[in-house]
Length: 241
Image (tube, rainbow, N blue to C red):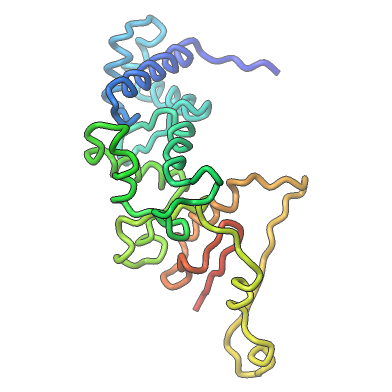
């Protein structure tokens, strides 16, 4: 079936792409505040955009459209938008993946420290550190990464980010060492309960981003349940007490 998109949404998308191009010329991170977006809309002056500037609900619906088509991603808590989030994140990850597809030396089991992020991006952007916190918060809200301090409930992980897509694949010996020995499971007094789950798609296709997103959501579990040392790109060992 055909989809009808208001002319104002398409015009707003053009304004956002122009903002993105301007940010590239200025070597700035692709982040704009809602006020910056509103000013750009007013400057454009197109008749179809006039109501967006005066009606916050219409503006939010238009931003929802931008998110749906992948032109922007918003975080209302920060009152900012990340432009071209998919393209930017792909370019961001390229700094930490070698040509052979493996993570570079700065990535330790999927974990990237904030200073390494700064070192990787500083040549492409001016005034990087002023906005980097906002960028990392947006990427975390997309569940593309998670700060270790939030995942493990330990302040020692502040400023270190786990990217599930950069984790190694699990091997059978690595997974086996987290299961109790046969004699332990046969002991009546054993208090440990082990439970395994396998994910399979009904149509035989599991989108590659599904499990990494589940790994990022493990941060919602209680303290002590999750450790970065027990996480892989395709497996996770979670402990409940």
